[in-house]
Image (cartoon, rainbow over all chains, first blue to last red; front, side, top):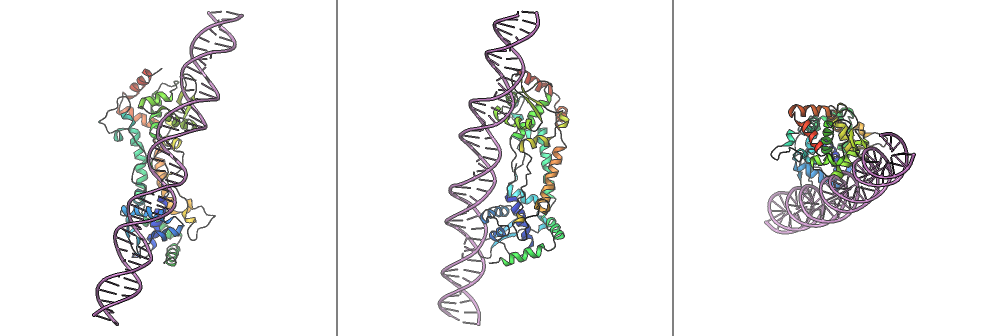
Length: 161
Length: 161
DNA sequence: GTTTAATTACTCGGATAGACACTGTCCGAGTCAGCCCGG
DNA sequence: CCGGGCTGACTCGGACAGTGTCTATCCGAGTAATTAAAC
């Protein structure tokens, strides 16, 4: 049960987008260069974010990606779901159906106590992720490292083509 | 981020072991037959549980697997960790280290705010799993379906070689 | 009848192929900026 | 000098290989029950 590596990239890239002056689009290549990541693969992750409505993409020169909503309305769960696809971690294949006394017309995903417990745990995880927004992350970072916004902005400015 | 299918099998098999008369070992073949699972592969999962100290295994005739502890002391997290290997779901590869101003002698797993948030969510998940034991599951099942212990026991008895 | 020792069948345990998803890369369709030309 | 059309380069977007992990299976080492014989 290992999460895709792209989740980390997507989260950091979204956070960096938080610090760019609004109105300016950021290309996948620049976002990738910031952390020395493979640009084409990061582009793939950003596409997923765009499909999920977290980013907006504009092609052509001066194009790139932008946050589609203010950071207050983008939760960590949104990003994780966009990359990982929203499937539940615990796979309940309803083995009870194959067991003795198993019925074909019963939804064991909701009836099985084990499945319920695993689902409850996963819900706690989701609840925590949904309760943290990009704005929260940004605020904490700016509180602990006040120079981050400016240095990030200037780095991207120096890398402007 | 999909959990191994063996987790579900392991959990259900452990629960079934809860209902067997103590002192009797259960072979992987019989546990697998209960849900019509591939016996050799379930055996692999049971081996992992044995390595983790959740089950004890005895070879030879009349051998098989037994719970190593009372169900009150076996949590869902124990089983999940035994199968999945205890690695964290969120992979923090510390991309900050590769970024501008990244230092080599800093542990970004504990410093990065994103990593902290993801870790906190995962901790909530683990806490929930650790708070539920096999005894809890068994009690709930017996409350909702009182006939389960006896029917399970008799099924395994009829399948005794 | 009891003890002892070899036999036998049975179980786990790890080593071995196959399938799927993730990782990484590439090139093409579409689009906007800039440039050139004409008025 | 100003407006319009064209060129061109740049960007995303999806299609294409490589790799690692999960899934599934098999056979061998070890063990305990069984059987048979000897005392």
